[in-house]
Image (tube, rainbow, N blue to C red):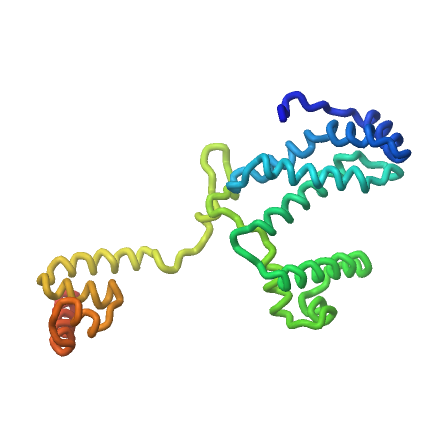
Length: 248
């Protein structure tokens, strides 16, 4: 489809076509769909950078648009776009969840949807959101199950997603993630270990590498290099003693 040639209906044209559609005019319905496809195009721009095929997102978005048109209440004083955009977004998000490489079990998704429905109903009635405890009690499950179900249906976010831009430089999510492993101290320790390893003899390097970097057992090392486990144990002890002396 050449999107550049898509028609764009005016509000009054939408209203006229809706009146005809309500009377059973299928051609009017088709014109409504065709005349509002640009809504879908504008929505799928929000989902760029997720690695999804734009054509697939467009098709899914069209399903949301059709649902919006078929369920639109013409008695309300709102534009089709006001009602249609959330419908299109919801359809695309469902598609992304269901086709996510991180698979979520059907039971967990069902629990999450039930919890969301109760949460929406409770908020309308009480004027405030229910706590996890209230939701869990209503559904007869543990609070941990409710929390996990909510977490499971969240859309994954790329670490390259920008969270701030001052016009010159962007800050990404990965910049805000604490790394307790690759700290300045750990880098310093790693550099120290590298320098010490250089000062070991070849046999000591081989034993340390296989035991503590490759994760092999003494018996596996012994079988690999053709000596006894007792000899490997002795070589390992000597290498560690050597490292301790160098580290002081």
